[in-house]
Image (cartoon, rainbow, N blue to C red):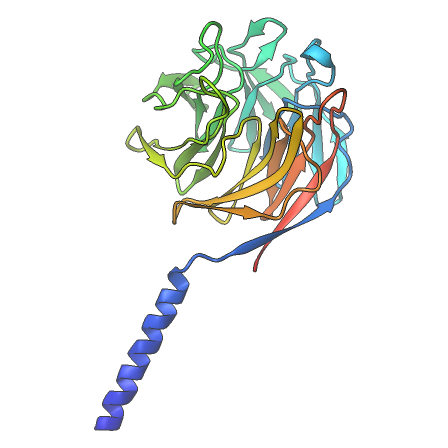
Length: 317
């Protein structure tokens, strides 16, 4: 009888230990590989991922960003090849994009002195663009998160309003916009990541130096909550989400273009530094396909409008 009790106790201890181990966060590392360059070097562009292919949209590659680009190029990570697609109807920079039901929505941005409300839908299956209902607030340098088929346009820079708190929800099915609870910290040149139905608005440029602020938005309750700030304030970076962790990629401070990569785990509300990207840059785009991160394009100072593509493979340490 004593042996049975002892065996049962040992089994319970083993199960408890296993459960505790499963709850512990898994450390990861990133290995970077150079891939085929994008045909058109550029920065301040937007990105959409549909059916395992990455679409690089708009941007610019001249001093002063005029004229802006309407260029759309598709990258297939499986073949490591690029293809030119139908041009966007409106050339622009500082735009953002979201994907719903395999269609890409290119929203807002700037063309010359004009801050845009423009919304255009791209269908990769037909290679066609269609104009949709305009965003209520004209702005550039904002960020987009997609949750349950709705697109959330967050923050940005408006005419005479450089640090917007504005949040507007777009429903592609109804082609309608709705105003939501404002973000607590007004900012632009921020980025967002979506994990478990919540949107994380990270960094950006507020009224001063780059901010390290992280704020979580829950569309289900229309509420915001403060989270652990980034180790250092940043703006003009890009984000990729893999296995419910958010990866912050690229940065610029003065004339120094960073290769820094930082990982944020919403489950633990903690930050960790990861293996740096080979090429320092900012205002790049990031697409995620099959749990791999693709860092594409960006700016490196002077006339360096990059076509560089680097693939980050994330594995447990």
